[in-house]
Amino acid sequence: MRKTALMVSLLLAAGTAAAQDKVTVQLKWLPQAQFAGYYVAAAKGFCKDAGLDVTIKPGGPDVAPVQVLLGGGADVMVDWMPSALAAREAGAAVVNIAQPFKSSGMMLTCRKDTGIKSPEDFRGKTLGVWFFGNEYPFLSWMSQLGIPTDGSAGGVTVLKQGFNVDPLLQKQADCISTMTYNEYWQVIDAGIPADQLVVFKYQDQGVATLEDGIYVLEDKLKDPAFEDKMVRFVRASMKGWKWAEENQDAAAEIVLDNDATGAQTEAHQKRMMGEIAKLTAGSNGALDEADYQRTVDTLMKGGSDPVITKTPEGAWTHAITDKAL
Image (tube, helix red, strand yellow):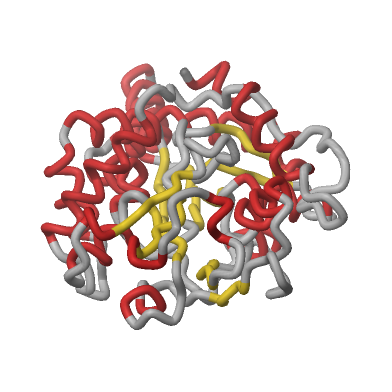
């Protein structure tokens, strides 16, 4: 009898150990080194060790992470804070539970031959800007500079930029939106050398907003089982991010293994990983309140058309990272 009871208990224990809690993550963009930490966490077994079965869903130009989250298509989303806070003010109760990215990689890249040397020189020029929520930091920056974005005299003409660098190459725009880890290097690879470019990093201009945070729906955090799952997910993800920082080439290879399109190249992903590591450096995953406040202040300084109109309440929590890290 005792032997039978022991066998049953061992089988139950084995079943419990094997049971993996499912977590679905919606990324902001397509598979690339920008999301290396999550791919590494899955590939190196950090998620499995945390009792998690993680599905990573790629984003893209037609994917709005917050809509996927609201529709129940994901438990977690990776998104930029400006679009998350704008969504929250519009009624989508999303909450930042962790912030792997410490610095912003966003910048405007301009052709030197346009004569642009400082932001004041933007007046009268055409600037390429990404939309779908990515325009918020730019519009806030222009508002703080007192530069209209309606194409009027003394203002700038905004060109709705696709997710490529063609407007700069074809001289349709004087400057375009780029990330330090991606489009800037596409410009270089297209044949325009760095000494023929002028870059304005949002981080250096004092208008940097937080990028690539981890968000969930507020109501879900009321469930202790979900909260526990998120603690384990954040812990595994940050382990993945720190491994990626220390093993950049290997992390890039893991990303490539997850690129079903075959569009990414090894050289580009390894270079991207090197740039991404600069942005995650200094973060242990916990949101820095000063960085959060700078983001909110930047978004509210939109003059007559701010990105958010009031100070958000409950838009972030340390409850998960306090337990995870």
